[in-house]
Structure formats: structure tokens, C-alpha cells
Length: 498
Image (cartoon, rainbow, N blue to C red):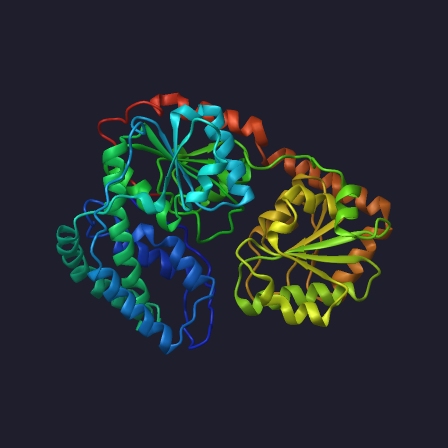
């Protein structure tokens, strides 16, 4: 297997019970090492990327002794658990395009459902995380929930897992020691190796029953989708992945596991290639879930939300970073708004809960904190005159829709996607609440300054995005239909991951 990896800068994180020296390079190395020996023909290490990023690189894991014991017990539980053995009702689902639908979020709905509609609902099976998603599919499309996946034979799985674990354990220890990382992370790693190896076999059983024409996913590095994609590739099935959000190098979207990745435009193509992705895998199709216009009336949304119609609104889009950084980001924003006459709104990331910000909401009652689902993306854009972000897809989408964007560089975590907005789109960059207050007042009070910012944003969008919405959907469908991608796979397909 040919694996090429981008040499990443070092990001040292120190969560509680300090798990130090977690870097992108260390995570890449761990994935590579655990990809061999292959489990049932699948390089299982590459299914761990999403988990490694969330728990280790983002620093959002509870490393207390209590949680370590819970992980150890989890290893035992999942190792000893018997297969449900329940049959799967796959009648009428054979020889179709198999889509994943990872979460029932607006952005993912707007990626998956238009593609299903364009290919023809009768030609598609959607593999979703929650049975209630079934009700939202176009008429004629078939649905399978993750819980519907057939169980595999436990005995052969245990024998294969134990065989691989004998090699994996010393590799994990070696990587941790080489990077100076505590061995406290081993129970977490083993737990996910158990879970993902069982998923790989279960996904294999699913694919053997459905015999899909191909597999299409929103994110091939997701914990479930990665197992499905690699099991599909091991069977010679064609696989494609979309890009569901902004790419923030170095870790997250690479190595690409699918045969082909459909990116938004030239900037993402360059990013993927710089991180070691083979150029032949990357196709610029556009962003199917993003429109370059706002489809709702600003005044109506403001009236509904009881927001002053005469005062400019500034919205902070939060990010799923470390807890301490989430507080710093929101507090910097709130403090800046107290120095202006502008209306402040904080829109949470889909993964966040309002309870986390309860103390800040009490300390800054003039700023409104909104759960992600209160406003659609278009409604949030319609309400906002200026958007603030650190690294956020919402900030990039605001640029596309012609909104002024200010990048907050106030965290210990270096800017990634936000830096692109500063360097290439010309968005202002601020490093304190005082700077933010001054910049917001400048934007609100200087029409010529706003015009220059908008011109720079428009040029950036023109240069870096291939298409939006239905045009991007058409591009993706055309790509899926070329090269027999909706037909049988080539006989000599390799399992290259890059």
C-alpha cells in the first residue's frame, strides 16, 4: 500500500491528566502502523482517523482514571459481545447506488438528498445513522439504518482480531514512546480497534447482500463510513467521497480512503494534493449543499427573532475546538460587543449544547446564544450583517453569500481555514476584543471600506469555487456516470490509500 502523508506542523495539546505531545504527525503514524497487518483484508488503522482527531488532536476527551477504566471495560464488553444474528431485510435493495447519510444535519441533508433525487430515488439505497431519517427521503428511495446491519460470526472475528492485536499492541506502544505520549491512550485505541473491526465485518456482510453498484459517502474518514468504504474497496466496489466542510490541514480529510473525492474547487484541490492525495483522485465539482445567494427575507427573520431592524447584527459561528478555546472565543466576542452599539448573536456548532455557554450567557445578557437548529443557514445569514469565526465552514459560506467576515485569531490553536480567509479572501484578522470592537465599528460605519472588502470576497469566490447547489449536483452525477463508475469496478483495483 502506497501511503503519502503531508509533514504537519506540531500542535501540542494539554487536556486534563495531561496527554502531551499529541501531534498530527503522531496520529498519521498511528494510522499507518495499525493499517498492518490487515484485518480481513482491510487496513483497519485508517478507520481511526475521525476518532483520533476528535479525542486526541482536538483535546476534547476526558482523560481521568475513571474514564480510562471505562475504556478498559469497553474493550472487554465489545470483545465478549455476541453478534445479534438478526437477519437483514434487503429485498429489492440489490444493484443500486449505496449512499451514506451520517447525521441528520442541514448541511448533510443538502448534500445527500439532492444527489439521490438526481440519480433517481429508485436507483438508491441510503444507509443512515437514525431510523427516523427514512421519513425525509425522496419517494422511491430505500433506507437502511446503521442498526440494521447484519451481525457477523463472532468466533472467526475474535480469532482474526487476536491475530492482528498481537502485532498492533507493540506498534501502539512504540509510536507513543517515540512521540513521548502517555500509554494511557492505549485502552481508547484498543476499544475502537475492537469496535471498528466488528463494523468492517458487518459492513462486508451488508455489501455482500446488497451488491451495490458503488458507494458514495459525505465523509470517508467518518467512523462508520470509513469501515464501509474500505470494506467496499476490498471487494472491488467503486467508492466516492464528498467534502462536507472546510478543510483545515493537516489532519482530518487525509489520507483519502475512497477512490475519488469531489471537492469544492481549486483551493481544496491544492490542499488535498499538498497533503499527499494523488491528483488522479481529486475532482473539482463544487459544493452541492451551498448556494451563493440567501433565499429568505432578512426582515421577516429578524421580526420573528425579535431583533432590532435598525441595528446591524454581528454573528459568531463557534467551532468544535477544545473547551477552553470555545470559552475564549465566545467571551472575546461578547466582550467586544459590549464596546459597540451592535447586536450580537452566537450561533452554536451542531455538536454543541447551550448548557456549555450558560455562564457566559448570564454574564452578557445583551448577546443572544442560539442552538444550531434555531435558524437555518440561510436564516442565520439573512439576519447577519457581519460574521465572526475562527475556523468554521459557516465563515466560508458567509463569504460565498457576500457577507463581511472577521476572523478571530485569539486561540492557542493556529488558524487553518480561517487563515485562508485572511490571506486569500482579504477578511480582517483581529487578536483581541478591543481589536474586534474597532473592526466591527469600522465595517459598520465606513461604506467604502465595506465595498472594498466585498470586491475582494467576490474575486476569491470566483477563483476558488467551481459551482454551487444544483450545478454542483449535476457535476457530481456526471462524474459518477463517467468511467463506468455506476457500472462494475475494474478487475484489478488496488487498495491504495493516499
